[in-house]
Image (cartoon, rainbow, N blue to C red; front, side, top):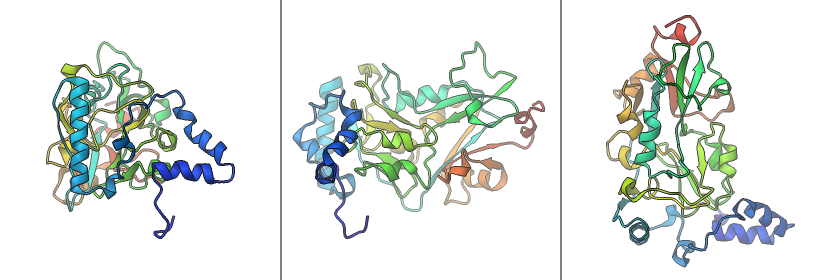
Length: 318
């Protein structure tokens, strides 16, 4: 699409689908995933809302005020919601030490609590794969493992979440620009703009996006009232969501919730543009790799292991 062509939004997407050759069939196909979802709660203000990138500060404040009222009405909790912007000179990356991770899944549950993910059914952004020693093929991993004690001596553990790709295929397939990449490297989703087509979910090679098939359920006492527009505000049925590196925390100088709860320090996070950051030194000095390098997504999520742990992954003991 050239810069001279009008940008496609939710409303023009529907009009274009109707006006194209075979338009009715195209629209029916586009809306097929939504046929079972009731969006009767969509207000006129929400439908006419400008795209995130086009909103002025005043526009955004009106939207934040509306969301605060909606959350308070729904949960009887008054949230503090912001629109936290990226900082200049910052590009976030994650590094995870496979030799240290013990598969306890505390990161999974801390993420759920921090980001107001549905509890029933529970939506999890992080999968922890139990991997057989001697393999780094994630198709051989098991994220349904149940053990009275971890880690297992015959396995190592590989958490997987959104890889915050430099070349994100999910962004390319979204027909209404409801997902995009921010200057600090984070791929975000505007839940008010998402039409629930799930094209992004199909395009992601890491199975990192989640769809709300039912109305998300969060007990009032579990709601995290510290929210951001593009991160952990409550979602509705029929929209996508995923890991966003806890941008409401990280853009204000804090660490992601999953990192803070890790009991063994396996998770590292920071600004790759700062040569003195811990993640910069890890990428420079450790044996690092990314998942599915062959698909060309260029993840900002790196895996590494210490030199004395490499043989264990390859089945030669720890």
